[in-house]
Image (cartoon, rainbow, N blue to C red):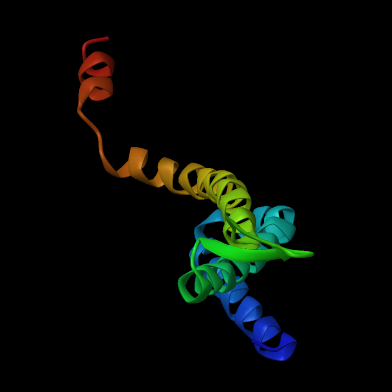
Length: 121
């Protein structure tokens, strides 16, 4: 994939993430904007690495002088490292979203306990 297409895909992913994060609010989105850019980059890069592994396999032949050996595909190694960081970053961003949505859930759903306790006093 050429650089221009990759940049377009990253921008498209970034915009998608920003729409998903809309409930967080404009001020908070400004605070996590850099994280959204990183997550978009990682999403597209992981896709590239995954395609490389699908095409070339997880184990590749490596030539070192006259020696030929089988080694882990460098794309597989990069993928394994990045996917862990991607999951951690995604969890962080979802935490912001959960905090933004949680107050709405609390207001909408009441078990009646507060009304019961407050009604007797």
